[in-house]
Length: 286
Ligand SMILES: Cc1cc2nc3c(=O)[nH]c(=O)nc-3n(C[C@H](O)[C@H](O)[C@H](O)COP(=O)(O)OP(=O)(O)OC[C@H]3O[C@@H](n4cnc5c(N)ncnc54)[C@H](O)[C@@H]3O)c2cc1C
Image (cartoon, rainbow, N blue to C red):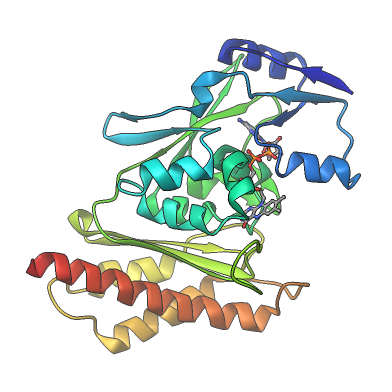
């Protein structure tokens, strides 16, 4: 197995262009498990750990640009203010060791339907910055990034450089059902982001369809019928839960039954909407 170790972003893009079969490795918390378990044996590994800029985040044009390698631990410590939904999801990932190594870039690269960063990225309307040596930068909205089970819109010669997320303008919540409280892959998960300025609510469903996805009809319902100054209408909340559940298309597997997942998505949708709405009204009253 060849081991490629670029030290700059340009070198990394060149290496990926010359060796599209090289598997990028960042924290290695997915890649090394796959290699150790003999799930794959790549001809080459492209180690991105020497490319320092991938570990940085910055505010760029009103968006928070989070380098692909920023680990969950730093998202929790440094970005819980502007990106509360992503930080909440990051707190539920693995263990401290996994949160120190694992990154949002790696979660995106793996594109597992169960990845915890996907629902909050979808709810917040995040955009993935991908780049190749030949075609330059490509900005991919999160809801166009996930194409199938562990399949993304990334081309073989592209690398993820960063993800752009607008700092929260309203409450955000992430909820995850697992078979225990820690070190658990989601049975299913749900994220919500209120965008009061746009009178819009964003959603993200995890581990309940072949890809992470938004509950579009549920979002449209709230955009149409939510009164942003009043307490939540229980009938509207119920309908929101039903439409979120209807947006899921899960399977039975070792972690849970499809029917349970559909039910749980509805419950999490109602709960997270209520939590977010309480915060929203509390802020208005303050
Ligand atoms: C014990 C354990 C517990 C876990 N718990 C959770 C959990 O609770 N929730 C969860 O979501 N995940 C969990 N994971 C999975 C894993 O930690 C996450 O998916 C993590 O985000 C992967 O990040 P990484 O930097 O380690 O990625 P890596 O393993 O380095 O890479 C993952 C994938 O992304 C690709 N990749 C990496 N960087 C780039 C890049 N810049 N451009 C293009 N492709 C790239 C790689 O080629 C690979 O396909 C767990 C893993 C372990 C071992």
